Length: 213
Image 1 (spheres, rainbow, N blue to C red):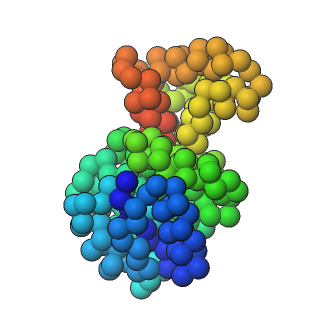
Image 2: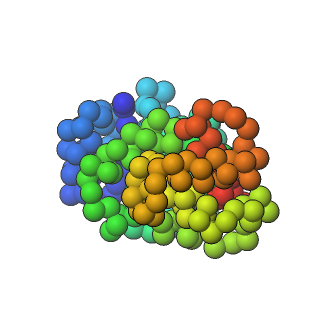
């Protein structure tokens, strides 16, 4: 898996390079500013990107805008955002395509290196990995009517699905059985009008339907 890495802090960038390459990824481009990121994302040999939101020259939202641009040019291109900030507007736009392959984690809340690496792999495989604070920010506006059909427990299950958690992990977090989790997920699929398909694909579609404008 060949990655573009965009991070302007030299020590963190060096650490991420070592971490990702030590877990089987190839860092094809490691950049520290928006113009170089834009050029790196044009490389057709790149498979995915891990990037910060705020990059030079303006330190505002360059990373997210670059992510949205590359996914417009290459639909479904996997992007893991790793940032200190939740940029609500652009986060919603990044998720709005409904194609998955998106992660958004907050640097200060990444406490498990193995989970982060696994999250990058899940995003690269087409899944979603979202920090709960990102979910809360994106959900701050009015939700679509189909989502209002979900029970409070179903919304809890779906929020954990948005974090990329397995049925077993959801069951552990909510202190219920995996069978109960599967029942809730099937009910979510039905209420969100998601037709029969591969479960992993429907999980992504359910999360994105929940977060969609």
